[in-house]
Image 1 (cartoon, chains in turn cyan, green):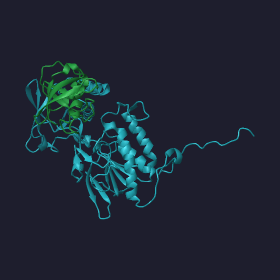
Image 2 (tube, rainbow over the protein chains, first blue to last red):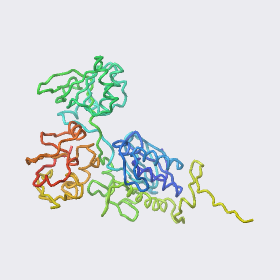
Image 3 (tube, one colour):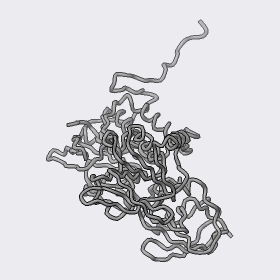
Image 4 (cartoon, chains in turn yellow, orange):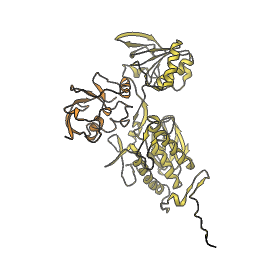
Length: 350
Length: 109
């Protein structure tokens, strides 16, 4: 059981900044994210793209913003549960929440801040008849353990970096691998395309384009697929079919937590971004209110206000007043201290 | 003239006549969102970077649109429900050439 002051759901920019603002109030955060790394959309979708509307940064790459936010919140020692999706929430009689992930990890805190952006990223599933039946019976959308594909017949579909990179990886561990893509062109980095081309020339990787998988066959598990190329169907025996068509965000289990949902987002009170469930707040792209703008800079503001109310829930009746970091510095939980250099007071005429 | 008239059919089959400004650097995806023709969160998911296909549209009038760039072509090659007249709304800027354009928003993936 992980115990903390604020469970932050979503480790994107707003979740990370929450750690900092909470830290100033001596509150500790633990972040949960379905993705295997922090940064949310900024790391997953557009790490190499510039953002021009972060105050004080005329231009910053989304990946660098994540890096900076991680550094900024580091003194406040955030905990992370990554690669797991927050699945279930329960509240006990004393007002303490327990959040359980899809992998069963339990987290406890008196306050939850949902900074879930557009939701958790789920694989996009191709529209092939019966594909749901073959899930875990030969069809996998995410490669968790590449070893299971060693010496197996595997077909990968997709035209981006992950389809290319995994094809290369699996070809190198002796999987009998076929890569199918709807176009002749791949949308991967030059390096990945080159590696794939080399393996194809060495007959270690079979690439079929422009083509697509149109049918799956097998009684109890997947035995073969139909590849359609130029309107001609070919059957290929396979052990595994791995469609890699990227990820798309889904609000997911949060939608069933009893929170008021409007326009695919969580309705909040703009006083402090509280939801209809006392103790649960929603900040950043995941919330909605009159006048809402889905901007990182607005999320930072929302996180800051939310932390003030979180403090009052966690420390009822205890006085606190806003302090400026320039005046009071940063006292990290890790024992580090940052402060403005002291003013020199010295006479010039003696 | 600062507006063009568009006819947009939503995912329920309802058609809407809307006016789109040509001087605000907007694109088709943003016009659909600004008129709230389909629920927020089901369109423009990637913010307009041609990195998702949530703003896929079928162009049903005979307008000549700007050619697809690589990013749009690549995304559509991985999208679902793609037809010959599919385009990503976020990649089509509102210009006076779009006067009278008709389009249908593709189903949600």
